[in-house]
Image (cartoon, rainbow, N blue to C red; front, side):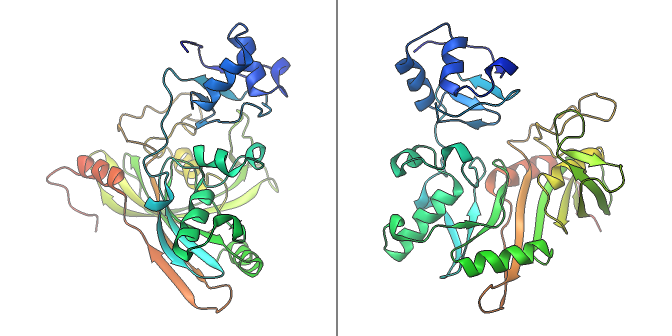
Length: 328
């Protein structure tokens, strides 16, 4: 199929219609079968993710992109390649690769197992990996329960609860901010060690999440930033989350004037100008390097660390230069 279509945002009069209906209208009326094939071939993105559900109900202002060529599954999106760091009857800890959604979009929750295999999430991959390790059929296992998540392009350590007890107790630890979560990230310029504290709201006025100075509004977000290494024109930072709001690190660093390299969402300055990212980062340079919590059943303190994956390691090495040394 040689269909072409410029990227567009869903118009108010299109909101509530299915992706297939909107595409068919925008493309000038091809057959329904041709539209379904476009979606099934992984040629349609909604926002920053491939959408494989032609029946998804669209919202106003969602961005839709028709790709020239089908987008293959990420090379790491296979359960046999997923690294499982810990597994017991209550929890499973895995290393999330970049390019995979942690959980499925609500509109896709009723997908069949066969359809999930075409576009798996980390939750799917983890369940299949657990089944493989236990020699069981994934359909016979209790569902994995979500207690936190990472953005699609963020890599790093993720825990899923495998029991109601674990879901409840881990959820309590996350709410009490006792879970250890540390990230590594690269930003342009020089940013000193500091604690960034603000109240975050869902819409700062331009449709994006952000901080507000209005008293009593929003949810408190606290990020502790420390310096790992000065690079050539960039800084490798360590960010420890005290709270865990959506996109917290990305928002805080962008509002501090140092957006994460590879950032495509929080790229606007307070005056409306856009940050110019010249880093050539391979993707969002954000990695969940450390995770620790008390086991929900035994109370034992568990802790894992994960170094930067290959793509970000090469990125840092390129920026490092020959005569630069770690920060003191």
